[in-house]
Length: 128
Length: 240
Image (cartoon, rainbow over all chains, first blue to last red; front, side, top):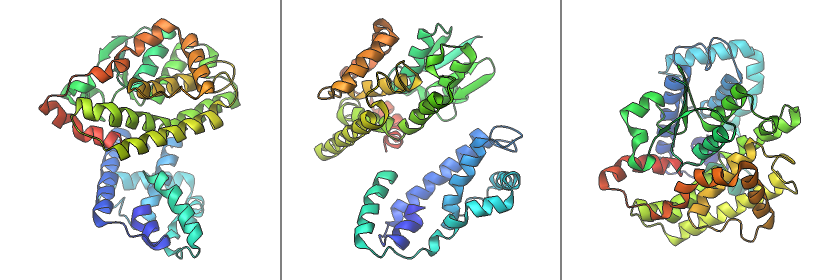
């Protein structure tokens, strides 16, 4: 999310294409693991019912979704899981919780250079 | 077949599990997975853990990965003394809090310190720039400050007056940079006192036994080229 969207849009920092490609490839590998090791042929990550594991996972995946990454396209199992989780959580609550992140790409650039500098420092630490 | 623990005592989380199981008299068969020989990448081990990492646990048909999950499984199954993972809601939450924080904080810094200072040059024959090493050691130092200020504070152990899973996980992490020759306890009397307390609570013999390998890691022979090629991608991913 930071490399694809927040850096260029909010912080006005370009991210080299190779770095972004590498990050997206890593995300792809993780999604593969999520499907093959955890989800497998189950409705939810740990069995037939939702657990905190599903909640943690879905909220993570909404980060790249918010940048336009096609996380669920071409992954029918993961997409089915997402629909199950959303249904159990309830669509309106799910949308409410994700209102901010889904509008993140429309955020204006940071106006104050000092704030940008402060944020950049914490973000680099976060992403290292 | 009883409980099997797939471990390499080179690995910090493996040491925590080894100590925990031995200290609590949990019967298990040790299945050594030699990381420096690339055994975690073998077809046989991939059947146990497709993520190709240690530790892993097999309890009959039940296989479990992820060190924190394994420690908690053992805690729950074997009815160990309460202080390891207290019933008290808030004390338990503090253990959970530490276990969650440490993955991307102390674990990461300790791993990077060992690999940048010793394993890259000695085992992999790859030089690490002095700036990178300095940056890694500075990050470790910052994390140790957070560890002391936020988690340890003025307590004997991380959660209070008794040892818990949090202390075991933390001490086994800190032995990584110790194995690399970093003097993490020097100039940090609170941390040094905590270290002595944890070692006494675990038992000195068991503590030394679990740390024999990491304390000799500086003397590891260099990897042969085939092993180096096999393990390198995993190493680079691990220490990012």
